[in-house]
Length: 187
View 1 (cartoon, one colour):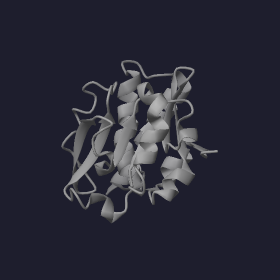
View 2 (view 1 turned 60 degrees about the vertical axis):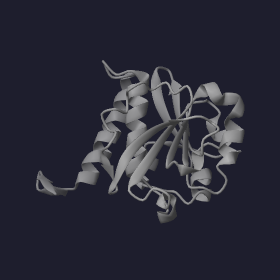
View 3 (view 1 turned 90 degrees about the vertical axis):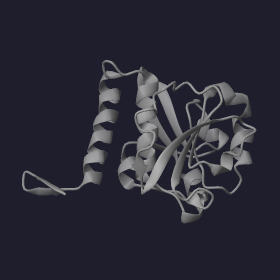
View 4 (view 1 turned 45 degrees about the horizontal axis):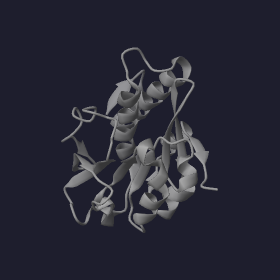
């Protein structure tokens, strides 16, 4: 814990502030200089792991790992290399690149690229009752049952959260994350 102008500042508050600054920088000025679209999206996805709580049974098959899965044709390149292996809620972040035939239910976060637009609804449905946070970038991602959309509008990355879908999967989203997002539903 740190003191700033006489107030107690926790590590979590610092991370929230940085996330808000990142969102505001992209909202007000487009992408910050030197940042690619997928570097910004990777930053968001990494921070989702910090601001969302998964039920304990989500980790029963791999208790020491937090799995961030990128589905075929992932556009991130090596953007997650810097954070792979870091600890998130006491678990090591592991980035996996999977095909749609792999066991997607093992993931905590699954990024579904726009190239899978025609199969998104089926992919999301195949997750069943598992507690996988689905993240995508298709404009209608939430209408297909997706949970978090990273939507590019006017050279900015906007965050849309389908709160109904996250509640059905028993994922708890920190209020600070909800404050910077547009809440949408799957209708």
